[in-house]
Image (cartoon, rainbow, N blue to C red):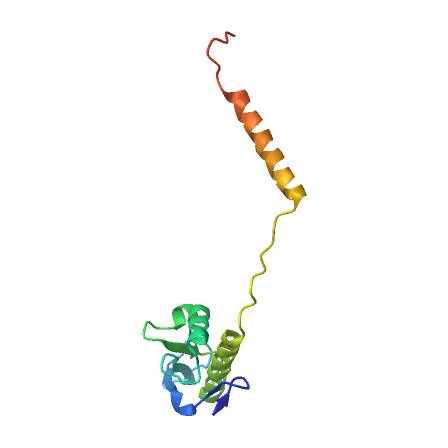
Length: 141
């Protein structure tokens, strides 16, 4: 059981790990041992996540989330499987924690009287500049 927040816990059975070959450091070992980890988490079927949290998680995950609602995290930073596995789980937990934070509601604001006045003055200056560019009929040079 992985405790994400006080209210959210993910069962170990919901996480599926597969090990793949990783590029990068490791010498001859990199060709023999599959050290990179691919973590799959089915967010769509997870009972611990509500619909609003799933939607925020989908937005945060971006391309890492499949159309079916499965989150795929690849970890290949370290040379050992165990450290990459721990890294993938830590990244999943961080992502779910960030999605668990409800967004701050936007406070509606009004423009000040001075900013309205500045806007209108800028529009008037721009209009006056454009009026100087027009060619008036009957005006001979």
